[in-house]
Image (cartoon, rainbow, N blue to C red; front, side):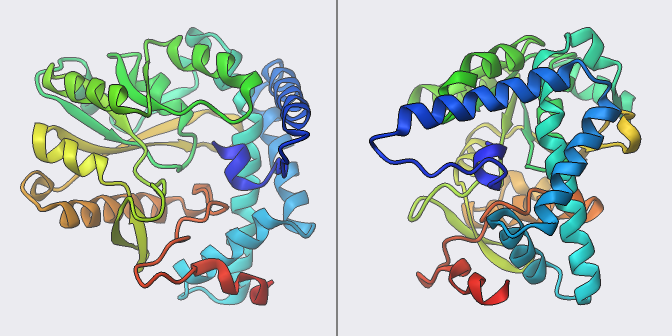
Length: 321
């Protein structure tokens, strides 16, 4: 979840005060998002951009992680260009927070007015017929919440759902993601079985391909030429059900004009490749999308936390403030 991973609302918890701090955080998030839901999207984005600027100019962990990631992923940029990308990425991360008012509380009909497809005919052919199973790879790029709402306007999409740590927003988030027809299943064996079932019924499933599955649980594959611990679930689903695979992300348009949904097909070889190769193809596909709008990627996430040799990628971060 953006709020926890980015550090924009970072709360260190102890066993004794866990309940109270989570309630305070939940109340703040709900109050802010509800307030933003009454605003035009352009105004909500302007407020989010302001939050991002604050995080750029003030010392904080989110900026530190974003700066470290960008320095390593874009070594071809000079220091001034890297700093500009850090600033713009934090502004976009702020928009991710304040646009939640629209994502959670606007009606489906109102939200649809802000969605456009790069290729509407492609979307109709892909999602309107359900002749073949389809897997959507939706990374933390642009507005990922909009992808579920956009695809659900054509056909239901089954996606894994992990309840947020802030329990107060769990019910609202679930209602928001389901209101357009999205199907949420738990991150458990039951949820994985539901994904297999949906694909075998020639339905659409959604996977977040750029989350670290945890130490010892993934496959290392290059992402911006850096080994990234990559979840194996997508590869297993692809190998066993042979779906059409697409990278889909919602590019955030300027001045609150809405979102453009981009659909990029994966290369055909993904259907016959071994698991390690599938992970490499997925990461390359995600990287191709990120390079289109690098400022809209979630650089505040520690994507390279674990390394194949056991080293900690971010251990040296404090020396690069």
